[in-house]
Image (cartoon, rainbow, N blue to C red; front, side, top):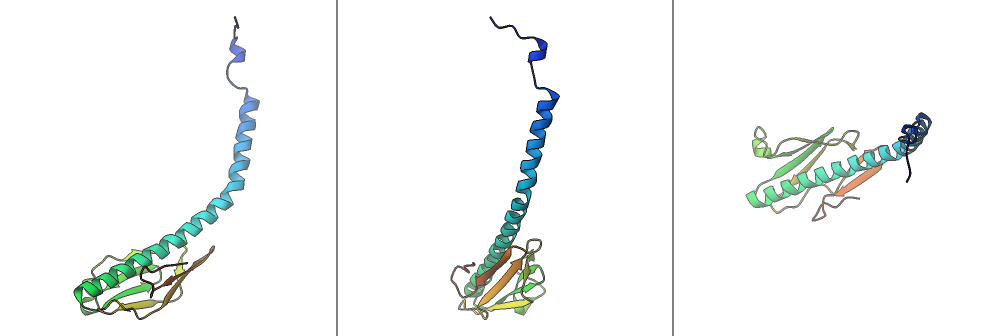
Length: 141
């Protein structure tokens, strides 16, 4: 039969400090990779947001038989009925932090669903994404 004394239970302070040092080193090495991943996520999320607003504007233009616009200015994206600008059909949405669009853009959807622009380019510190406005699903790369 094995008898344990009080000194045999638990961990020593040295062992705990060693484990804490290892955890700190691993965390400091993985932090830059995590930041890059988050930046890539923000770019993709912003492209998805714009694609969703483009899709909504196209559906509204077709179903209501009138022109709708998607206005992208700074970090905001907004679907507008140009005949009733004071009462937008959707709330204003905002791009993720650090993501920009190349200039102020207005994409107009005709009642048949066709658009006036071909591409929208977004960028941040990790790269860029292009949304193809002429694509049926507003694909982005």
